[in-house]
Length: 614
Ligand SMILES: [Fe+2]
Image (cartoon, rainbow, N blue to C red; front, top):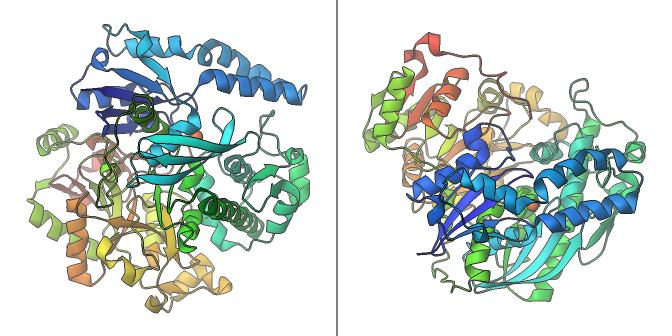
């Protein structure tokens, strides 16, 4: 037996993954344990979890692989500062001591952290380093159902690369070309995230969600001034407008002058049509870059399959467009496409590429991610014990009764915290740590955003749909198990909207019609889809099936089980606390059901302000 521990850390979203004999056994992000969103510290709790889950001590692990190469990254920082000197002096002075103290000596630094898990761990030579984008590429290709694929990775930046193209064949990945820092789609998108007043590295989703409310009025300016985009999708950014290479901000005064407005201060300034137009413009430019890149790659490499990872691969609107254009026959996205997934990629890269183990590809087009259900789980006994400790009032039901009861409560417009099985790896909740509701309800989007999630009312929700019903409801012909594809809701489902909706979403003005599933239909008539498969999440599948039997609707609203600024819940205690701190009506943990009205009112808490707003 060969066990490989992959680790990503010290940048954003630290995580650990365990691969045994090539099989992905477990993976989790540190933020879920530490309760600090995007936690980038050494993932002590995540490493502990993957070890404990397989009854292994660290000294029994054969190889430990870190997801990037600190020396290469150091070289990039140093050269960037030198190239732009003396401009970046302030940020140089801020980051260099950290680099010299911690990051550059990472092997020793990692070794010291690892020893805290097990004092018998003495073999520093077991620690290896992968390259940042190679880790992304490995996380995209090795778990995919393809023997041969083009691999595209796109993110902010790793060591030097920001965009890479590789060809994956059997157990090997052959890097073909790279685009280097400071030219980066990820950083370009982040610059606009910053400019529109959202937090870099987490607010990118909000920009994407905001885009359909605007018109891409500034697309031409972006392509003329900021991005030199070539026909093959390669690009260079005009650094005259950006500050991220050397400064402490993303954009500079030239950037603000170009668009005629200052950077939005989220505390003082509300979103205006201008910001929505800017969001629409950068989203449209991103889509154009990604479409040009993938179109030229499909011709150049000659494989019918595409795999993608890196933070930009979480842009599910752009992903939907690649699919719609039929550029590749099949596409697979790593669900943990951001840096957390680098831990898994680093471990897989070592097993296949370094140790040259044979790769067996499943013949039925199944991937190796186990539905991304790779995190901790809790037995009914553990749940019962924990709920008793928390002072919760609950009932136990068998599977069938539980599913019938929850389906009918959903029909009564109740909001439900659904906590089942192993926690998801990656940023999306996929029916293991989800808040679920009836998508047919007119009031549900507003209610969930404002009363449960405590977040901006424009944020859309995603539908979970039974795989076999997909074609009847959406213009999508591909599985989307990881909620990484956006597609149009079918037009023949249109119903007239009510007066309240017109006011709330300003839809009247944009002249957009909604569907019979308003809670999961965005203003531009699209939805970010999760297809639910009985092979990977039977209980969730059965719940939706029951809901369909009752209502003819094979869809539920699925949003992550957390509030704004909080990592997705991991344990029963996290789930109960979130339940008691929000207006969720019902909590279901494994086979136990809890109603809010039955709980001790002393256990209710002011939860809304406990987390830093993202
Ligand atoms: Fe990355």
